[in-house]
Length: 148
Image (cartoon, rainbow, N blue to C red):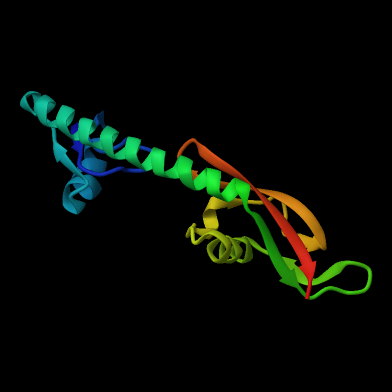
């Protein structure tokens, strides 16, 4: 069944796309939630208009994300944590701690799921963390863990 998507649906498509989905999925999920409309041949103009507005919005968001990336990459983020004499932390520095430190240092608010760490930081020192600000825009954040 052909469906015009009214919003982004993970694994299916983005707003304005005409996609071919199973009729049960369309009937039971996409149509009742308002995420899609049953597509006809006359909806191509409406789909093109939706894609154009989506592309304009994405371009503005990408520009804003580039500015945020430059700001984040210039800043060195310091996080104070309790540590023992050998430099090991009592606990660890998590994604949420990094997000809070970025917010306090640069006033840029990110979701904790945007931070990508191989593992939580458990020692004093400097580490590099990646933050996904927008699709295709990743910032490299320098995190310095210091003793309290």
